[in-house]
Length: 99
View 1 (spheres, rainbow, N blue to C red):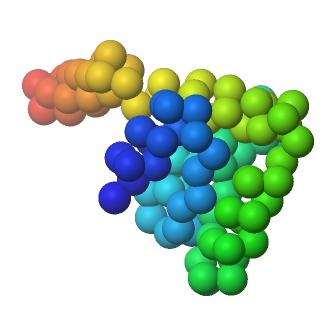
View 2 (view 1 turned 120 degrees about the vertical axis):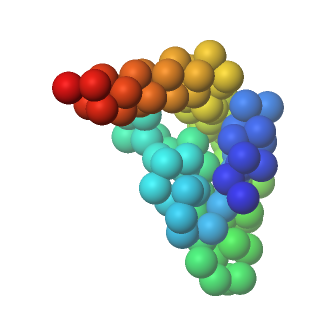
View 3 (view 1 turned 180 degrees about the vertical axis):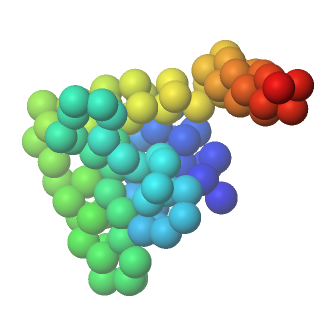
């Protein structure tokens, strides 16, 4: 489930997730205007091993860049933002029903 990945990212961890569903569609994606992913996506055991090795061998500057992008990206899933988007979605549905 993707919430674990979001929690890792919020903690500033470099995340390796499965290239499917939520992680690939919504979680480990670049922020608007960014070319840096907040982690890595893998499908095979070999890819997981490769990306874990990459994450563990990053130079400190690059590691910090991934960490900051991950923390910023995780904010998209905060209670405040999620609640606001959900309320807007429901309001739109209700407005469509009353028209």
